[in-house]
Image (cartoon, rainbow, N blue to C red; front, side, top):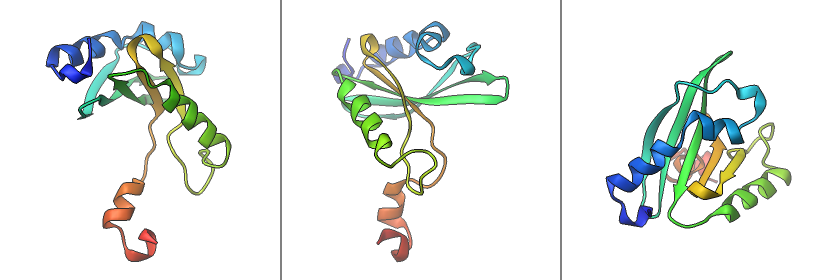
Length: 132
């Protein structure tokens, strides 16, 4: 099934496969137990769908961002991991989401949820000082 078909059926099939079992297989041990998983679609594109996956954790609600692609995009995961290693880690002034896992059978990239202002917002609508 492909997201190119953009049908609700394709999206529903992918979202139904994002289960606690799938997440438990690829997410770090300290994020477990994973149960009562909720999925909320954030944005649908022609070739990918972005959604938030959340569940209750011992220290509050846990959440990751999932991106399901129409084609294999393991390259995105590898590129993100490389970029973070060379200076965009969480403790840096400028950061990007942490690549957590890539699930090839679902063409699904899991990444950390980053709080704060999006770079896109700063570039297009931020004060001139921030845009520069």
